Each structure stands twice: as C-alpha cells, then as structure tokens.
Image (cartoon, rainbow, N blue to C red; front, side, top):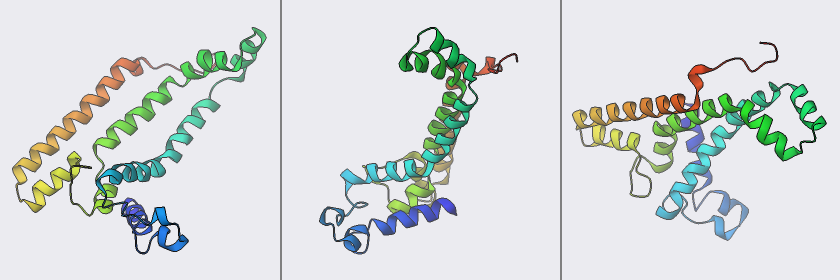
Length: 182
C-alpha cells in the first residue's frame, strides 16, 4: 500500500491541470509528464530513486561507520591524501556493502510493478514497457495466463541469475569479518 500511495502522490503532483505546475504557476511544469513518451521513463526513474535513495544512503553510511579509524590514521601518517585513502581504504572496505546495494537495486528493478503501474495507469507503451507490467497485462487484460506464467518464470530466472552472478564475481561467498582482530 505504501508504494501505491507514493505512486498516487506523484501522479497527482505531476498532472498538467492540477499538479505542481498549475499550483506554482511555473509554465514548464505544466506539461503532461506521464503522458509524454519522452518524459515517462525519466519520471518513473526519478520516483523510484526518490523512494530508495534513503535506504541505500543508510546502507553506505553504516558501511563507512564500520571502517576502523586506525586505517585512516595509518594512511595519513604514511602521507596518503584523501583520494588515495578513498581508493585504498574506503572502497575495499565497502565491497560487501556495494554488492548488497547493487543486488538489491538490480533484482528490485526487475520486479517493479506497483509504482510503475500506478504512475502509468497500467498501460504499457513503448516508452516504458517492463516485464512485470507486460506480465500483468498479458495475464489479466488479455487473459493469457499461460503466457503470463511463462513471463513470471523468466523474470524469476533472470533475477536469480543476476543475483548469483553478482555473488560469484564479487567474492561475497568468501565473506569474512572486516573488523580489527576478528
């Protein structure tokens, strides 16, 4: 329900007659954001980013706070600058956080339905035709449940494959503690 509410709030705020453009009197905001094929994809990406940037920010903030300060002190004593410290300490220490965040983003993007469905009204167009919407339209509008089930299986296999590839190439399966003395 929360995701649908987010979609509804953004859908209402971007209507050309009653949205932000009409309320604020800004002419360039009075366009049909969700009906224009050139604008619909950036609008959907913006809404999804708005929704999940705080989560990934907290993931990275938690990851950075786990890095021992002694590593930075030692690098500073050795004469490493900020960029060198970032490349040699911060990025390697955030490897598992990056893998987790990337896996969440990629597999999540494969299964987006609710926000996109609410924003677009469930009408797939060439501008934003994603597999979950296509699966829904095939199953419930065209009543081709066998084809929709096959699309669901394909979607699940793609998500699983992407997750396994990310896990395999990141070394996530060999994860060890990054804490001092652990």
